Structures are given as structure tokens and as C-alpha cells.
Amino acid sequence: MSSYTRTSRKRPLSFYLLAGLTTLFLIYVYAPMACLYILSFQGPEGGMSFPMVGWSTHWFQTLFSGEGQGLGDVPSAFQRSIRLAACTAVLTLVISVTAGLAYRRKFPGSGAVFYAAIASMVLPGIFVGFGIALMFNLLGWQVNWFTSGIGAQLTWTLPFGLLIMFIVLGRFRSSYEEAAVDLGASASQRFRWVILPIILPGVIGIAMAGLTSSYEETARTSLNVGMGNTMPMEVMGLLNAASTPVLFAIGTLTTLISFSLIILSLVVVSQLAKRRSMRTNA
Amino acid sequence: MLSSQTSPSRVTIPPKLASVLQVTPMALVFLALVIVPLGLIFVVSFLDYNFAQVFPELYLETWVDVLTSDLTLALYLKTFKFLIIVWAITAPLGFAIAYFLAFHLRSNWLRTLLVTAIAIPFWTSGPIRMVSWVPLLGREGVVNQALLGAGVIDEPLGWLMYSEFAVLVAYVQMLTMPMIATALNSMAKIPPSVIQAAQDAGASEWQIVRDIIFPLVRPGLAIGTIIVTTAIMGDVVMVKFMGGSQVNTVGMSIITDLNAFMYPPAAAKSILLLVVVLSIVVSLLRFADIRKELRN
Image 1 (spheres, chains in turn blue, green):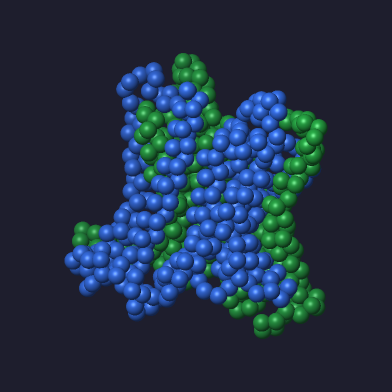
Image 2 (cartoon, chains in turn purple, cyan):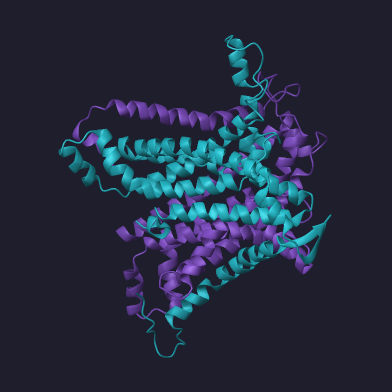
């Protein structure tokens, strides 16, 4: 890494050009979000663009009181989404970790399942969502958040879970487990005391990826949740109905929530890594 | 590989069988929720229908319509146009930024910080990211205000928001990140000694990029291209909002049929879309072995 700096301390011209490009890209990515956060504190008289007409938390209050403004039912959509995301995350975690462990050996059908996962990931979301809704329709079953809803989301989260497991186990040294086998550890002991502690950061990563991608997913979910909207569907509805900064207040709040989730998982993962390195150094 | 020789008192499962059992839950999910629905869509595309009803009778007109209509061609041309423009921007941009992060930055913590900064927007809510363009590109948005103030234009530009331009802006904002990530992943595997050797032999930076780094990063770019392709070909949400319901693509036409309960045409269009996307993906996979890419 940083090979161009090893030979000479002087930075080449390309460094400054590329640094400029990267900065411009970050501005491009962050400027709209920054505008949104600022405008969510717009005064009660203000609109959806600058200038700011005073500062207030008026739009957050409107959001929580849920009065008027063409606001559907944001709190219950939020609850529905969180419930769905929690169930999906747990299922993704369990199914991906077990399936990932299977891939430590060659077994009949490994290619088929792997390609099914890749297909599930690259298939257009509306296509999968439509297929599942159609199947439920033909079987005469009602689409429901806890059946077709979770199922539709699993087709999106499981491939990522499996790929993360490949990354995690690609770095796993099988000599640790072989040592445990030589010492007479049973399969469950090996999993509990050898494999799980080593792959734990990756496992948490799978749960977080499951949680966030479930919370975000619309293409597959929308035809399959049945009664009531999920949060992104609710926001999409509001995009067309409400034309006040209350939309921006929702944006600021949901960003805060996802940031806390990301930071929380990063802290947990780095704590685990620290604990492990302390243990191996001791 | 692992041996299955545990103490004789325990019930031992042959390792291959254990693997098959472990993968079964995932296999069942994909079977029930991806493969069976896919088959159903295929069957339904050949059935007769009228308003809100599908009859179990063979009807080939749907396919004839879909495959011969000028509208299908126009929709695919429009979708491919988006794909090509977005790819032509995100691939070089992603490569350049990844190259900067991997080979130009001296400090590791700055690299981690920048990678995190680039990754974070990818995790924020899609609809929120879209609506955040309104204060910038809208009629009274920052860009229009600035241009009016500078006297460049006399009246606000209407095509900045709710237009094809806006769709492209949003696509590029979202899809550069996977290109950076996949290119960076490939670059991290290039041993520094290779670059060092080329430098010692007197290669210029441009020669190193062109003859060493680019060929080694091609698999990463291929995977990034797969992500961009599937995201754009299957997208309806971005096109609908950023295009202000003015822009029609392949995905949008499927949604229109679904909303009108016209299942067979929606099914036929979905199958066609699937065939197109999968042929692109399969031809790109020649450049990259996904499982190999994920290992270090």
C-alpha cells in the first residue's frame, strides 16, 4: 500500500488531482443529506427549500403528534418495520451461519445452492416480490407480514449473509478446529468454544446487514406485507402527498436511528476484537 | 478437512450429510420463495386473462405482443441508456477513488475514515436520500437560486428535478459506492512488491495503472458492474420518484401492469427482463469468480 510514497516523500501531481476528485465526490454524496438535516429544523412558516424562515423543532412535533399534513400513520409503520426487521435479522443470522458452516467442506448440491443465492440476489426485486405474491394468490393464502413479508425479505438478506460467511470463513484457520478435535471436543463444544468466538464479529455483521437491509427493502416487500405500510413505503407515500419539511424531519430521525445502529455494531465488533487480541496476547 | 472421528459413544454424522443438513434451511427458502415463484411466473405468462382474472387456457398473444411491440424496444433502449451512462461514470470514478485510497494515502486511519464516509450513505434510507435532492435541484433549490443569483439563467431550470437528469444524478450517487468497494477489494490483494518492482524498472505511474493495476482489478470492476446492472435494470423506486412519474423504464412498465391486475403481461415482461439481466450477469461472470474474489 501507499507505494508511490515509499520512494519519494514528495507527492506527485496525480495525488492532488485524485484527492480533489475524492473530495468532490464526498460533497456530491453528502451535500443533499446536509441540506435535508438543516431544513428539518425549518421554522413553522418555512418551506421545502432555502432560505430558512427561523429555526424550530415544529416539524418534529408535527411528526410525533401525527396531526394533519397528509401524514398517514408513521408510528405504526415504524413499529411494523422494526418488527419485520428484527424477525428477518434473527432468521438471516441463524440460516446464513448454518449454511456458511456447511460450505467448509464439499458436499453434493453446494453449487446449486450457491447459484440459487446469486440468482436470488441479482433477480430484479419486483420480479421476486411479484412471484411470491402470485404464489400466495394461487394457493389461496393471504399475504401477511410474518409469512410472505419475512419470506420476501429473506430472499434479499440471505445471499448477503452467505457471502459474509464466505468472507469470514475464508479467513478462518481450520487448524484451530483440528486442534480442538484432537483434544476430544464434541461438535457442539467446537462450535460453542472455538468457531463461534472467532466468527462472532462476522455473525454480528450478518445480523446488522439483515436488520438494515430489511428495514430498507421495498421492491420485494411491498406486494407481500399485506395490511398496512412499512416505513419506506410510508415515506414513499408521503413523498407524493406531503409537501412540507415534515418529510425532512422523518429523514433526520431515520438517519439518526440507522447511524446509532451502525455505530453500536461497530463498537460491539471492535470491543470483541480488542478482547480477543488481549486474550491471545496474555 | 475435518475428520468425523469423535469418541465412539457419540452418534456421528458423516461430514457430507452434516453439510447437506446445514444448508437445507437456506436451500428450502430459495426453493420455495425464488425458484417455485419463478416457475409460476413462467406458467402464468402463457395464460389467458381478462380484467383481474387469469384463466387456465393457453394464450400466446401476450408473448407476441411483448416481443414484437415497439414499446418494449423503446423501454429497453431507455433502460440501457441509463445503464450505459451510469456505468460510464461510476466505473472510472470508482476506480479512480479506490486507486487513490489504496495507493496514494499514507495513513491507515485516514483510509478507514474515508472508506467509512463513502460507505455510510449507502446505509441510509433510500426514499430519504431521494427526497434530499429536492432542496438542491428543485425549482426553488440551491442550484437554481445560485444560477439565478449569478445571472447565468433568467428563470429556474425545470429539468434539474423530476427528469431523466435527476434519475441519473441519483443513480450515480448510489452506485459509485459498490464500484469503489469492489475495486478496492481487488486492489488490496495486489502485493506492494509488484508495484515496487515496476517502479524500480522505471515504469511511470500511468504505465503501472494501465499495465498492472487495471488488469488485476478487472474482476472487481466486473462484480461492481453486475451490482450496477441489476440495480438499474430492476429499479422502479428511483425512476418513479426522481423521474416524477414522467420517465418510463422496463421496471416501471411491469409495475403499471401489476397495478392494473394484468398478471400475464407483467409475467412475460418479467421473464424477458430476467433473461436479459441474467445474460448480462453470466457474460460478466466470465471476468470474475465470485467465491475466489471473497477470499484473501
